[in-house]
Image 1 (cartoon, rainbow, N blue to C red):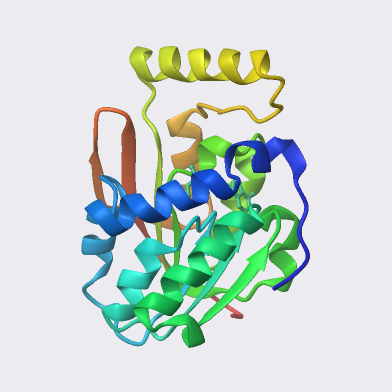
Image 2 (tube, rainbow, N blue to C red):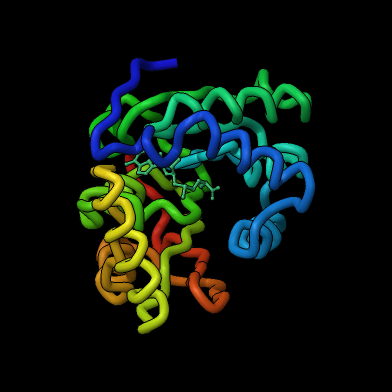
Length: 219
Ligand SMILES: C[S@@+](CC[C@H](N)C(=O)[O-])C[C@H]1O[C@@H](n2cnc3c(N)ncnc32)[C@H](O)[C@@H]1O
């Protein structure tokens, strides 16, 4: 694994306790309501594909894609605790030897990470202040498809995020949630040459699969 750091107070939120809770939740209930449809949408054509997951968390979604026939995966997460939990899950699933893990901010380390056929990021864009930098780095690392989810721009989502951010500030935690403009996120992907192929939503989250309209050049 690469070296680690903790910009933005990530470890206060995505520390060992939360990593274990997330792992146990997957063991009990399976994938969450955004990861599940994204994995199902990616399943056709996944055999032999290479994967990259940004903000991988426990890596549960890509464990399922590896079990479905993907060749190998690279996982990046700022939280070393999540990457430890991800290692445990990958070992249990017997796919650990097909995974490369990196701890750090993907935006800062993107130049050291190889592109992959499928880039996956579930509930990550809202954890990062510089949305254009993150989405551009992601777009530059996909050879074929991107699966991502982000919070919907609805009053109840903004209310919840505002309350959570006030609570975090009161607890002196520097981490904050960001409700980035969905149209701006989609605009960055379109400008980078992707078109949405499948989309869906829950009351809080919007998810989508984006496909390159032109094959990646020079990768
Ligand atoms: C809400 S959690 C979601 C984890 C996982 N994707 C899931 O759906 O269970 C967001 C994760 O993104 C990671 N993260 C946020 N911004 C990141 C970045 N720029 N580079 C790498 N990881 C990032 C955080 O450390 C955290 O583990």
